[in-house]
Length: 262
Image (cartoon, rainbow, N blue to C red; front, side):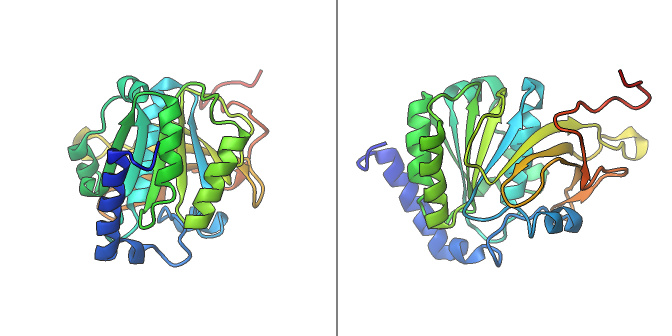
């Protein structure tokens, strides 16, 4: 996107206003995105590293909402008024559905911090991402795409990684209905919706997520986690029988309870 773009200029002005009101100062010490689950954050050296690129994959289209929710809740846990910049293509919006502000509020997030921008195509999405990641004062930048993203090659990825490093802004790449490919991401995750625990009177339980760490540049991958979202405490917590930090054979499918191995 060109520097003269009125949409980008408006975005930068709003981010600057929010940062001036305390957004930039609200970043946690060290700048990492933490889940609130002590064991999970400690295993990653203090949460997702700031100023880095982190990928979240939902190989099944049905898990796209879970991957988006996990990334958004993680970013919106940062204190203060720092905005979360969410970039997505119109195709992703059409396939994954609209972002519902009351739903974010119901989960304990502040939808007023969300700056949502939809682009008509992946080319403009990538151009916006390169500009947005350099806007100081944001809690994080989410870039959501659907299916293959040929423009996001290693060269484009390095450009985004350098922008994130220089600005100190964390970039969360939502790769929905896509398969992992070589990249410069600091971490790569697979996110799958997990069964929630029913509450009293069979009321719906809290959102639950099955996570697998597919890649981590700073350490070993292969760990699996099951995390629940706690609305009241505004944090994630370990679900019972979580597979925390237990290595799993590379890309081995997890069998349902009681199923026999082939």
